Length: 428
Image (cartoon, rainbow, N blue to C red; front, top):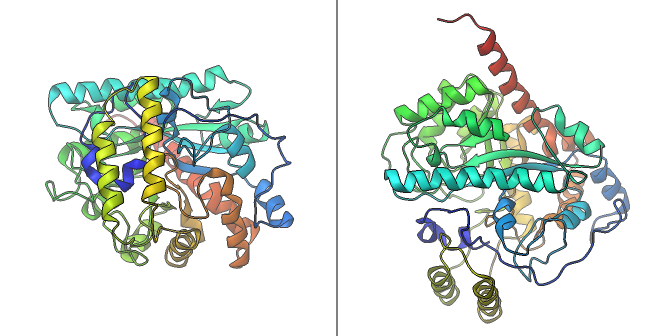
């Protein structure tokens, strides 16, 4: 959860496979509660039953960063206030999250051959780590390949695992490498992250390409050919414009917010929301940049110092990781976050997106384990609160089912259809 709160300064390094993740070794474990027995404070039994009847997917899980922590297990219960992680199997059961898109994340580094090759190797190994998670717990997880797999796997009681790429930088100058990631299980791919790269301008960097670069346009065509959904979260408005004009299949913003609610470049304005929905796309609302937060200089300075002491691109030994956790907890105690984003702020973004784009074009991508979370929505155990709030706002079960998974699965199915169409087309 450090990444977003420390800004772009800590993102300069290459994310090696042994890199220190945003969280660390767990401080307590527990077995999962009996499925169906979980409750969430503030959610009525009726709303809980409704939530549990839905297929629920999140399009941006940064949890693969936790998989490489020595001693950390996805099947044990952890504590967001202990090790700062937000997703594990017991909490997914409690919050009834059926799965989603597990991110292969690479923070943007130098655009040099050596750095890019290291990023390629790290990204490949992160994808392998996701597959190893599934292989190690075949009764718990299922690797999904098609849009139709999600309902089938969830009905079997297994957690749905699609893979996604956050930041295409590791592809280097060879967009055909996306095919290798596709075979690993990647079904959504972004272009850039907090800084520009060879494929696109970032929404949080100075303009370089004026949208997608020539290589980015080639990459977009390759996504369409393979059946990978293009993700424009983190990319600039002009990059989104290019993708809207050029893509033969609908787009997704896997973890974005609404600029009308909070004017931040990572968020999307109403005009682009309408354009996205007009072409069948979907915005997945996150829990990051949902409101302006007051500066907290002592906390910011302490967190910056912590990130410099334990950089994201360096593997931490168990003792170092324990020290990192202790120092992070000390910062939280001495300089607690003030005026932080709340559950109501998240809902304001979600309800605004539905109002502008329509209920067929909105979903959930909270950015868990990548900087997401809000007061009252600290981890995935709290997710039924979103369903309860949507019921209170007057949305039907069918509407809520679309928001939780139907819309993004429709977009994935459209990408599959485009890939099949291109594969069947006569050569030109």
